[in-house]
Image 1 (tube, helix red, strand yellow):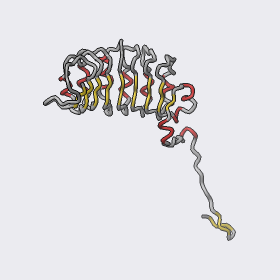
Image 2 (image 1 turned 135 degrees about the vertical axis):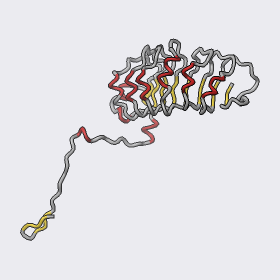
Image 3 (image 1 turned 180 degrees about the vertical axis):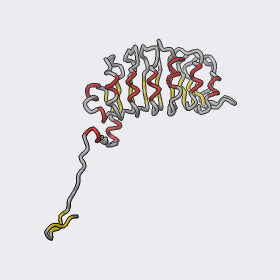
Length: 220
């Protein structure tokens, strides 16, 4: 406050920040989070408001790697049955992604960049005809929050060796493969609580049992 000729004068100071320094806050509205977009063009109009994106069964041309960075709040992405011969490395920009479905595609390897998806909790790698599964799983093995892994209908007869590095895994889905016996190698997965083996070639008369000394609950 400054006095001048007997009049009180209040002086305000404003600091103007460049637009690049101001980040818009997207409200966590429950209806926005639950809304699922299935059209990429529509989703790109306001990508910061997209939490769920389902592009399955569209056989579309995916955007450039840098475009994925616009989906800064995306938590769920479904690219199932899109005949992808490669998985976009740009998915690594999806820092908030929790669930990723890549089932039923034509790729051989997951890009190393997916090892940056630190918030990923669940991934679907079902019905992969060409995947080099052992190498691809190495990309995911150190993700700190990955708890659920789907390897259904992958023509598996045995456990990929790299799977044994998934120390945080809690649920493992191996249904509709070609296992003839319980893969006891997974005993090394200390946090595993549930394993689904239904649709394999077991001859058992009961379901949802515990095998003595095995650990996780198993569905046959």
